[in-house]
Length: 224
Image (cartoon, rainbow, N blue to C red; front, side, top):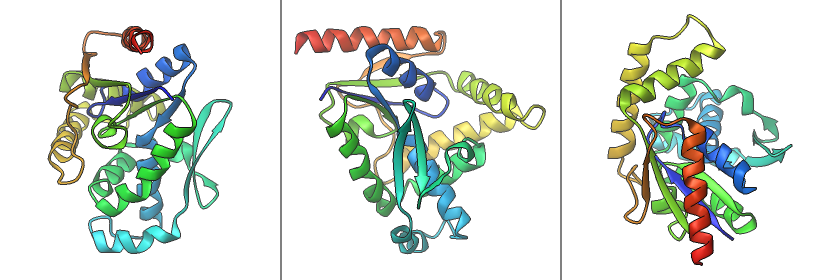
């Protein structure tokens, strides 16, 4: 099965670009960030102290995180409850980032991600896909953009959902803090895989970035 691993920092456009690429190549898009967001939210709803790794580990067996596709759209469920519409807030993103540093959390979700890559041709986005989850992926992409541009994109995304409730300055601060956390965590930190192709989207549209990845994928497939 052909797999594309797409890594990069928050706000680089990974989800949008990966989704467009999947459509162009007729592949399954796996949003791993959604998996971590779902688990983070589920733990929070249980009242677990997310800063307490032992408490998080103790709660994990009670949570059955699953992915299902409905009209080619990824839906996230926990114990049968669909949380897809509830996980796209900045607060849930922080929950995901805090809990993703724990080995017990990554171990729980790793097999789920690898199984999908064994069953389907996938493009999977996250922060350690090319380095940890799918180290043998046929194509690895490191998608990035200037931090101010990433903050602006996240601001516009959140404003579209809740106008007048977001601060660009605060979101830029959160993006920088997220970068610091993701790049310096002890387990599976965010980094560019040695054999990854870097795509800087600062001055690119999502469709242009997706088309670039499609061209790289076709080249790899033809070379193989």
